[in-house]
Length: 561
Image (tube, rainbow, N blue to C red):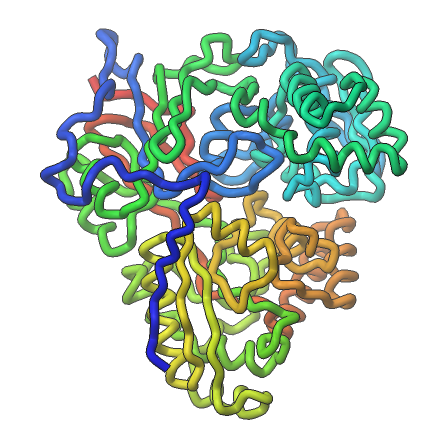
């Protein structure tokens, strides 16, 4: 069969529009508004180039890094993680574990939302209650499924009551999807959905119905689900240092400084996130000053950025694992021998060296070395065509087969897919490649109709529970992460024990056992662990940082005089 590469033009509501050509001569020499005030170092307008467009600013309805980049600037969380992933203050100034199943948080006072309302414990309760509402259908509900009740003690104290002890609760509360929204905008969003469903009840009545549950609530929640999130996506209301000014789909999102921010003074006035999918176009914009930060420099141009007199790379070890996913319930991928054959036919080292320009680490397990509990005893995934052929001969598909791989519209993903296409042909697996716009790709991957797809999982909390439970627990087939329909009761039991164990050494043992099970079952095959390296134009901006999750941090930004 001829090798084919299909570029599928499914550019729906999330379509990327590239305003400039990739030719350097067509790139503006200076970005509008990238200026400094008379004081020097302050009053600047920062422009960041993004490879993918954010899906939504509603923290409960997507879990992608492009959206997280903006939401991290708009919303505060109860607790926060620094560049070393250590837990510190967020909107809570103090916290304690009262008993195995209860956490108490003391909240900061004199904090206001972008809409001017005062931050209180009611906003915390409204936010988490919404996240867990089945009508919202949040893809991150799994992170707080153990929460039974949010108790408002007073305006500035709130208690979290959990169904069982949950060791990583604080790291989950630091996740961007736990960003606290104002109850006012949440109420407005629900009212908009209720009106859209012609439901003749108030928001408070709906909340009472949700508390009681039952068939009537289930029916109503289904009716309003389609319209939920519209108000929040258009009017995100947080307490962090930036607020939404405007969004131009396919082009940019502009955030402006929040003057009533409760933290330290910021030096920027606006931050513009420009959508520039092509690597060469972003690189040219970085070098000529069209953007001050490039969120993703492709590996082959890393040295070029380092060598340029005005640009540099911000290096950071990441928490990501890039993987190849199989459809665990679909023939021939339901055969362990087929999955092992494909895994051994992939030359990960060459992918890293030839496509990634040496950036990345060959994977050995399903969580990266930067994550707590990574099993150092596991060997790297080996490239061995003879062993791959042996595995295939032990299957019902010894003569090979045809298959399709889905990827998002990223140039590196395309190159890796083409590389795997070539290697798999050596064991008579003929691979067709279908490439989709990022938002469309995610929607399709969640449907579970794939043969194979390639994606990246970032253990954004730094805790192995987040790296493994949503990816591989049977209950996570609801759309939270287990897109390959994998189920193993033995693994389920180990993951449940790991998240409830408070002793750190005992927890690590559970996760070592979990990784061993996964390496043998191989519902997905890890490819490599990522290294982060955004580019920055040092003549335009200083103090830009990146955390291990991949979020560009702006707290210490200043502008050269």
